[in-house]
Image (cartoon, rainbow, N blue to C red; front, top):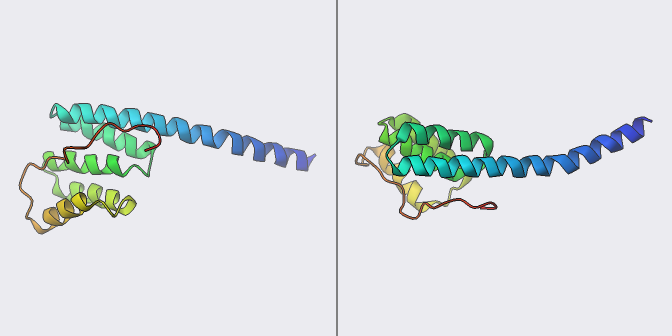
Amino acid sequence: MKQHNLVFAFLFFTLSVPSLLIAGSDSSIVSYNQGLSFFSKNHFEEALSLFLQAADQNFNSWQSYQMAGYCYFQLRDKNSALEAFGESLKINPHNAHLVKVYNDLKEGAAILPLRPVADAGILQPGT
């Protein structure tokens, strides 16, 4: 009987977790894309909230952390911007543009306000 319960638990876990991850990814994409919309309208506090929500929903979303960093910077919160940029770079250390922005900001060479790269586009599932 215990073996049947263990098999059932294993099957339930292996069948349900992928669907939970996919659902979480979809909601993080929606939050991220809504954040981009607010950011483009200079509504940085609203955008920040959505980018942080997207990051909470998908801890591997380096784009969400990057955009949260831009929001913090627009809101003149240098330390939080550095922290968010650092989180993005932990996930995607090969982001050459963000490495430069991060180093310039850390060294005091960045001039307010920073703008994200022009090609920051809409996220699609699986990206």
